[in-house]
Amino acid sequence: MSEFDPHRIRLGANKELHARPFPELPAHVRLVHCCVRSSPKTWPMVRQWIQTRLQDLPNEFSGRWVRDAMDGWCRVELHTEFVAITLVVPDGLQFSEVADAQWLSQVPSDIFVMARLTSEVGQTAFDPQFEAVSEFLDGRVRAASNFSPDTAGFSNWQVRFLEDPGPETAGRILQLVLEIETYRTLAVIGIDKVRQAHPVLQSVATALPSSAEKALEHSQMLMMLEILTAEASKLHDIWEQLAWRIGANQAYHNLVFQRLTDLADQPYDGAVGLSQFLRRRLTPAIATMETVMRRRDELARQVEDRADLLRTQLQLNLQNQTRDLLASLERSAVTQIRLQTAVEGLSTVAIAYYALNLITPMVEPWVPLAFLGWVKAGLAPVVVGSVWWILSRIRNRVI
Image 1 (cartoon, rainbow, N blue to C red):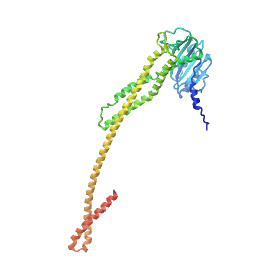
Image 2: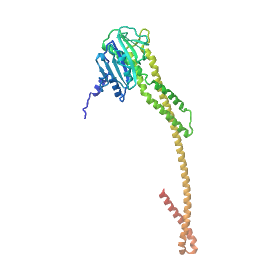
Image 3: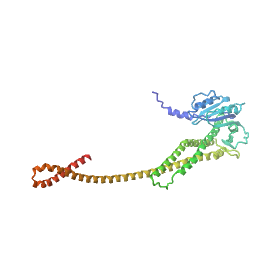
Image 4: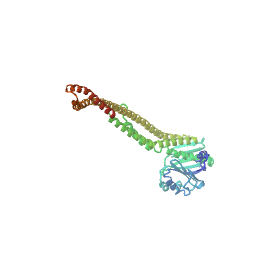
């Protein structure tokens, strides 16, 4: 039996707080950042793919692995649904030499994010192609991006430090910028499936029977209940496919703007700021997802309410049918009892008649002929009563 550790929860909580520390990076650096879909099932294949470029990546590590050599600095982080790979591009090499097209084409899973970041110290002007330009931390840092992939498929970022803040601060700021790029992409994953769910919801709304409809026939109510069950199944499928995805997208959306808040993002020199650009593009997509799920929930409630109403009507109909059947059985039982009573009466008379005819020859030798009629008259009530008593005993035993 393993020894109980009273500190395991506290130590686990503290470990979680320090699971993803900010890297220490120079202010003048170039980075390649990729995020690849990963799960416990696909991680071994993704790990082998990473190891073709990072041969020293171990097979087992706890959530995060970093190579600290500056010329070859890299980091691999495991997240819930993806693995993030960040590589420093050494001086003298091109971006394409660190993350080349051939290596990327061999990835065994979906690539969510491909970004290139160039960080410098100074006030060099940004490339005119960048649509969004912001300044961070009261103007001490500026950043720009076009949020559009280039011909190689990479999004490009440029960061300018007015003064070298040191590796700790530079690493923290660059990490936050990469997280903005990562989470803004993840925030809209699955939007196509959400849009595909819209016509399904429309078909469900059309198929719903009107609340004013009254299905008078039992067969009609059963048919309507079958339709509602099929529509409820469609709504449940939508919930299974989208509920977790939309919840994750909302969390990623919040993280994007939380990182921008952490950087004190402000538009630079009249340009469209990063917050403005992303709010205009991301927020409507998140609103669309939330609207679809609200519509699904409303339809699910309507389907359930109408199905409950139909079930209640069917139950009432069955109760009425049962009541009528019991009443019919009761009437049949009363009629049967009456017939049985009549039959018993006739049976009593018939049996008594035959019994009296059997008894008469036995008493004739002992009774004078003048008194024979009186004897028969006296025996008749006794025979009838006896027969009635015997039949009553038999009936009571059977019942």
